[in-house]
Length: 356
Image (cartoon, rainbow, N blue to C red):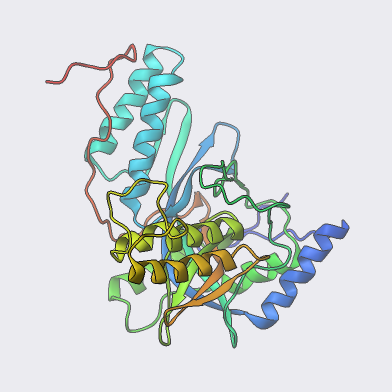
């Protein structure tokens, strides 16, 4: 395939494939309908994760730490742990372990966004999180978004990971609706006066250095509206059902403890459904329990409680792409913490080194 003018300011051609399988065609029709109702992107801000590229894989990258962290340093800390466990459990010999541990040492003291170690290149990647919005508000899950055939409300059940085994390939064919969305979002840039000058300058620069746009899988979160605005009240999830489960947990376990309805030292099994002998608190807990129970009646994506509206919303992430691959953190991106040691030190044999 001709990669096109993949130099700074140039773009790759988008390869479009027409859906032919019945299920794929329905998903495509669903996406087109969604654009008609929620075609305006509402940008929330950047998210960060880690991708790796092994020898011979170019131009593809594989996501190894999901792109969900709120600041670059959180992603660097994730890479720190990733390399430490690889050194501890998977190094083939002492030479490889020394190389991995040297990379860990750098990440403990430096803000490293791109490094090669043991034949693999790692990069902190930056994605822009946004959601479709329209007259009806923020987009909710689509009928064709993945849902379990039988909803499992067990909080200990294994759930699919966000970006699990995800390979990002700029040359992979995409359906027409995704191609149109990628083209429409190429020019997405911070322009409002509420953004600092350096943020806007970095955003304009990214249009030239990383002119292409790739879309990561959709995620789902719980948003609350109290008054006129929406705010997220949960992290992203791989499916709408997992977002509902997080709201169920908040209603029955977390919020009752935060609001003094259940003692913080109560056992893990105590929640809004088990109740309390205190009459006043029992009545309010029953309200929480009824709200949570309403989530289990079909695919419920909206509920009201105590003056707030909660909605399961469909969030999306775009990854800017340049000649050298996915975009990394920008100079204006804010780090909420400093690099630090996360794990105990290992020697070249994989043994824990004595402290001091």
